Length: 198
Figure (spheres, rainbow, N blue to C red):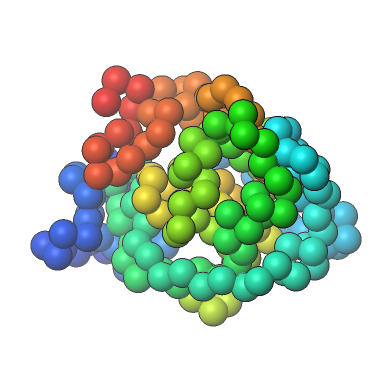
């Protein structure tokens, strides 16, 4: 399914089934790329089943402890990119600050233009889960999600929503944009969970 120009085979056990390794960083999304000229107009809302709803500025986000994570990412379209280094805030630190209620079981990530994706709470809280504002030591580019994107490397990369604007904790699992259009509700690349019927 992946039509990129650079492919490499990898036999190290790091690449899930039916994936091709690339050294490029393909750009895939729906809608327009947002460009933020005035970051004072950007915020991140954390709400839903939490004790302490938050409306965070970009500076508020960057005030959380900075975390760095090196991992591989796997796109549902068939490419994998190895050894990415992300800098940002651990998702579990955001959840802890908000005080997630016991009845919460899922997370809905809200991005620009009404785009959403859903995650089980355990996936959001995983040790490798990050809200990233930098990649390989450089601020994210607009095409790759500036100012803030999710990074959930144990799931297919569409779950790592770009241009985040909201994190909603819910009791029930509500399908996001691609999930309503046939993609798998969880998206584990090692289980080849690409589509609803997988």
